[in-house]
Length: 329
Image 1 (cartoon, rainbow, N blue to C red):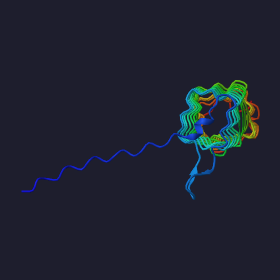
Image 2: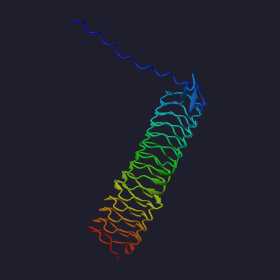
Image 3: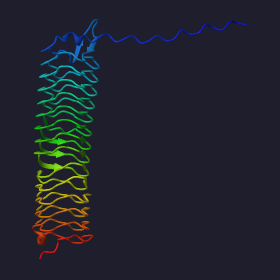
Image 4: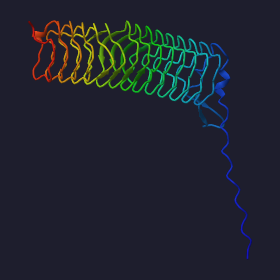
C-alpha cells in the first residue's frame, strides 16, 4: 500500500500590518496630526493608501495642545495621555479608550465619540458642542465647567460619579442616560431630553433647569428642594422615590401619570401643574401653590393639602382615595 501523504503545513499567520507612519508626528506638546487624513499616493501608481490613526496606541503620551482635527482614531488607546488644550474638531474617536486622560480645555466639537471611554478623565472646561455622545462612558470624570451644547446623539451616555459642577448643557438629547451619584451642583441645563434617564443620589444644589423633558425617567434618592424647573418641565410618567420637591418652582409642570407616592411637594409653586392620573398617595402639598393645577383621576389617599393655596381653583374630578386638608374652611 502507498504511504499516506505528509500532513499539510499549518497556514502561516497573516503578516503584521506595517507600523502606522502617522506615529512619527507624535513629537510631544504641540504635535499636529492633520496630515493623517485622506489618501496618500504610493508606488507603483495607481496605488493609493488611506491615512488614519485607527487603533493606534498613544497611552500616556505627552501631547498637550496637539491637533487631531478630522483624524480617524477609531478604537485608539489614549489612556492617561496628556491632551490638555488639544483640538479634536470632527475627530473620529468611536470606541476609543481615554481612561484617566487629561483633556482640560480640549476642543471636541463635532467629534464622533460613540462608545468611547472617558472614565476618570480630566475634562474641565472641555467643549463637546455637536459631538456624538451615544454610549459614551464619563464615569467619575472631572467635567467642571464643561460645555455640552447641541448634542443630538447622546443616548445611553453614562455620567455616574462624574463631577459636572458649573457645567453648561443646552439643546441636548440624552435619552436613557445614567446619572448615578453625579455632582450637578450649580449646573445650567436648558432644552434637555432626558427621557427614561436614571437620576439617583445626584446632588442638584443650586442647579438651574429650563425646558426639561424627562418622560418616564427614574428619580431616586435625589433632593430637588428649592429647584427651579421652569419651562415648563415634562415629567410625565416619571417614577420618584425617596426624593423631595419641597419649595421647588414648577409652574405648569407636567406630571401626568407620575408614580410619586409619599413625595413631599410642600411649599412648592405648582400653579397650572398637571397631575392627571398620578400616584401621589401619602404625599404632602402643605402650603403649596396649586392654583389651576389639575389633579383629575389622581390617586390621593392620605395626601396632605393642608394650607395649600388655590385649592378651590384646582381641578379634582374623579380623584381616588381620601386626601386630607382639601376642604377650604
